[in-house]
Length: 67
Image 1: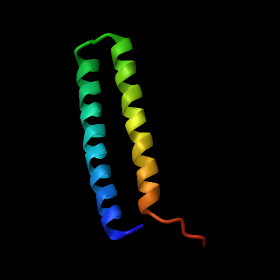
Image 2: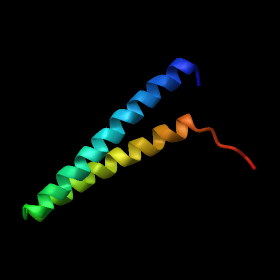
Image 3: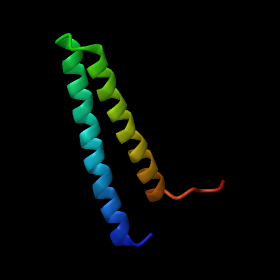
Image 4: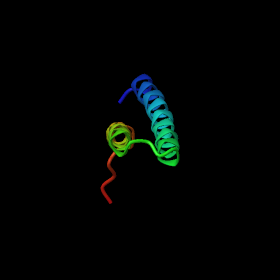
């Protein structure tokens, strides 16, 4: 992976991490205020999708090392 591509992927990863943290804070606030369980579940699902994207992108950045 070229340096510029890797830098772009790292930038995307940073944005997704922030979005993941924002969802986490929103979910906690929804739970504390007694929000509808279905809405909380949907938010958790969106948060999981972001986590999956993060994992895939991080795997592109970090090469597999055969020990």
